[in-house]
View 1 (spheres, rainbow, N blue to C red):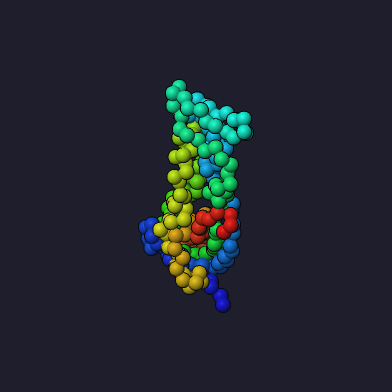
View 2 (cartoon, rainbow, N blue to C red):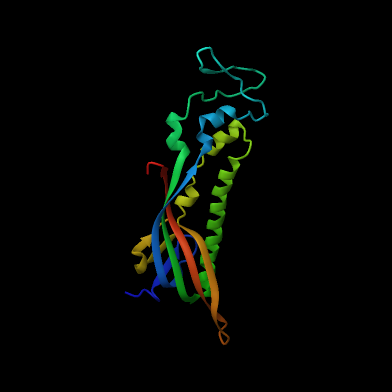
Amino acid sequence: MSIEGSLITISGSGGPYKLYLRSAESEFLIEPFDRLEFSNQRLREAPTASGAKPLIVTSFGGKPIQLASTCTGDSPRPLNPDDNNINSIKQQFNIDRYTLSGVQSLSSDTSGVNTIYKDHAQRINHFNFHQEKLSMDLSYPALINLQSQSFWWLTNTGVTITGTALGGSLTNCLIISFNPEVSHIYTSSGQILKVWQMVFDQRTISDRTG
């Protein structure tokens, strides 16, 4: 059955905006990532906010011991291996990804969707920045602060995309890319029509066991 010209509606962050489809494809992806802010080794080695290093020595039995010091004013560090932290460190995005292309749609609607896309691009950048921070020389308090992030802004966007060709309503969609292109201008009315391409995800987060 041809879906060309069928309608999809984007709502939840402005709108609703109506676009017309040419084609739609879907796939399932897994994107692994590491949360090194949960690594005991990383937490042991991190300096205090003032730059002081934790005082950790090895006992005669080979067990690490943290020495208390009023000079460093340090917090107790985790001294065990990461056996119990593996699932917190090794995480993944579970992604249902949709790739759409569209026929002529109103410029006002494509502009509205483009505004949503710009917001979602910032959300993705926010996640990337979080990951980049972990390659820096961060203090122990900074690492603990990063642990509080749940990345809800990628998994709970509040944007719903609805269409028969999509099987109904898809909630919490994250628009990965959106590319509208002018296809026709009606000089008498000034109305502009655009063709477009869009990729969006529905994402959940889990440990690597799925």
